[in-house]
Length: 186
Image (cartoon, rainbow, N blue to C red):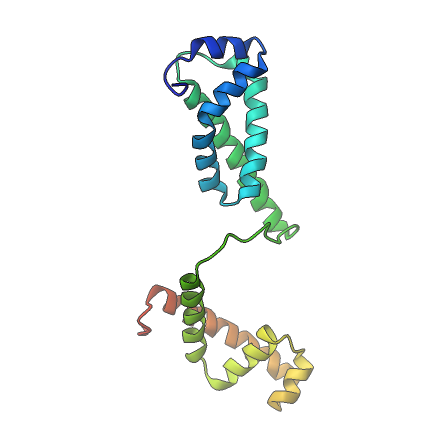
């Protein structure tokens, strides 16, 4: 098996630049590398990008491989550090707010969606009717402060202050319902 201590003939050929030998080494380890990178990155596209980058790094650094460790261990390290670099780059983009649209959402089960919806409904039910209406009109339905003020028959400034209080209360209530699903308060 290639993941054992020394696939010496393949490694030696790969170290001399033999692309076929290197490809054989990758084939023998690819499933495990994919598993690691997917668990770290949680995205098929990100996994593919990171693995491509890692495999290119590994090929260019083949001469650095020392036979005192298993080839798979050496490759795992390259894949791992490449994935961590991808995570750091992704997090930096999120902090700046650019390119924050998710690549493609992983499919969620109906049960997960139902549970999430139940938590939101529970949290909303804990708000006063005024706060709930303000939050729903602005955040869910996208009304402007002026339009919401007409609906609620209050000044736009009051809509703004009520919305701030409603968001804070909703956040607390949502946290309570997700940490205490039975719905009992503190």
